[in-house]
Image (cartoon, helix red, strand yellow):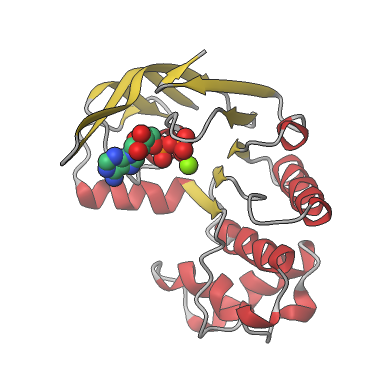
Length: 220
Ligand SMILES: Nc1ncnc2c1ncn2[C@@H]1O[C@H](COP(=O)(O)OP(=O)(O)O)[C@@H](O)[C@H]1O
Ligand SMILES: [Mg+2]
């Protein structure tokens, strides 16, 4: 489904060049669950951002379902990103002034989905994730674990094939971390998603089919 061949990414900052990705080669099959591990600063988020078309790369090749991501302009990249990928972050990134329902429905606004259909799409999703009763709550009225479950619902609302989760349990205690990883594993299984998840936690990584370990911008 996804193939990276010697992908490179260098950041220019006023402190000089940072080679965040150095010759990354990786194949990911449809439906696979991969955990990416490695020390802070080794390039995990950069890798996820390149995979999810949130960021460009500057060497090598990246193909999504056989199609090169290189020639894409900004607009095509944004379209591909919206169609294929769902994102889940450590910091949840819910809009504080919007209810749970509106947060989850938000990505539908950017597609031609009528307002009337929003409910029919969002409610079954909330029910499936066990958070339907939180529909009218505001983000500040939720625990961290609940906020992350809402963010997972939002990542699924456009029915992407691939879920990218950057340290999704990084802000959660053990109990909530376990609930969130079990939910993600179940979502991946029942909805047939490909899941790529960054984590520092060996226990979380043990849910994956395969662990990719990174060091200094490379895969070990
Ligand atoms: N926008 C940026 N500008 C300059 N350097 C960056 C930028 N983003 C990340 N980096 C650098 O790239 C390297 C990899 O970062 P990152 O992918 O965030 O690592 P990780 O997620 O594994 O902690 C780090 O050295 C980081 O400082
Ligand atoms: Mg990171």
